Image (cartoon, rainbow, N blue to C red):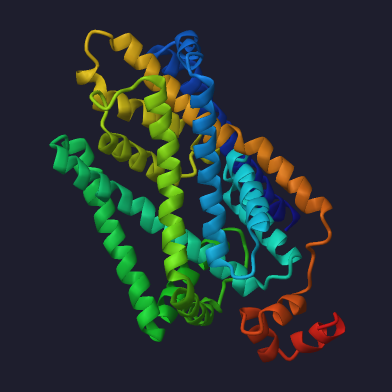
Length: 388
């Protein structure tokens, strides 16, 4: 039995390090082999070096606005969260996702731990993560459709852009229908929860873990809490989600225009289409934060969109495309890593924000925490003992 028990941890360890090795190999291949063949890094650096101080300040300002809109979205999905707390949580979680292969789950665990240290209940945290995730998915699938509509107006839509948009439209319709039915009918929500629980149990069985049996009831509670949140915050949640994606797109568009890629070469609608496709790719956990994969998708897509309008200066156009994309990714990916390390230190050292759930309940008497503790005969004495 000892030998059998040892096999599973060893298998998980091999899978984990195998994923890391594959991610590193992909990143090295893209940055060391593929991108230099498209445009050498010397010409890219020379192109970036031509930016003026005002242009650098402007694109940095756009990057900061992009981050702030993400914090607004988090606030919209979690009542009681301050802007500074949202900044700390978002940047810390983003850094983990950007540096660790498969870091999404690790980031999720750390974000949950941070929220819990500030007194938010597990149900409120789960609702924030789920709702913002669903809204972001809606936006990622909707962007290609919006880009296709704009391209159709300008007459520059191509088959390579139409197909991803149609696929995104079909997926979006399916997700919206499932989400709407789950909110409309309690029994449908329970069915979705049971189905997801069965899938999770199948995965857990591979690792000799017990099956989950409560996801149906949890889905019903999630439905009730989601309806309550959407009724009060749908406008703020929708507006902040749209702003966060458009602000990120603005950083890319400004990078292109400041570098020298003109609208006559690549239109704003074409940039949006390529950006939307890259956003879909970033959801796949191929590399941490999509590093390498996103750069390649943006460079290839923008070059394909503008190569026929670049004129005789194709090598210059290539350098400009590569320079703009690498500038965009440096601002929206590279700079996020040290910033997230700084916000983690803030959370770790700042004890004044630490709260017990009972303190959140007193500030928000109608929150999920209050409902949890009223319905939980164990939680009530625990809240009273903590000073609630």
